[in-house]
Image (cartoon, rainbow, N blue to C red; front, top):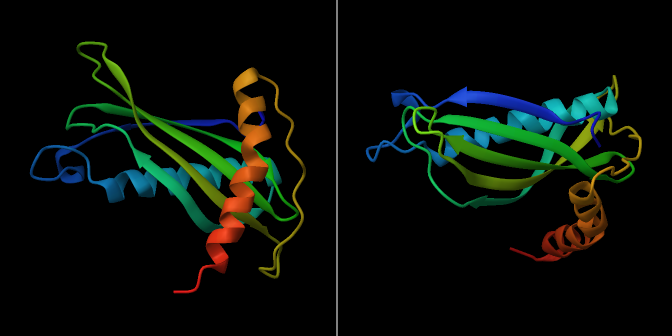
Length: 152
């Protein structure tokens, strides 16, 4: 899992924020999608597409002047798909305060030169936290399958 781990740092600027001076959720989602794609490409050595944003939990807000640190890792794989776990922490560099802002799971699919899904290598957890993510991957995969079966 460490091979795919990616960390990106972003500064929350006024154009990124709403009237409460907190970052737009959509801006955070764009950052999450970008880091998930980079992480999945590092893992698969292929171009990828976002198949789904499986969950996004906004746990706290970040304000103008905060720094966001996004970290992503491929947490499990299917035949052509990769589940990517992304965390976002906000930091006030003046006070040193740091808090968990967002957690998200996305599914990315590797694509070949003809834009068809292509197989990806498996993933191997190394730390206890990675083992927990890996071990709970099948339950999240089952949940995604059930969600697809729900008719709208």
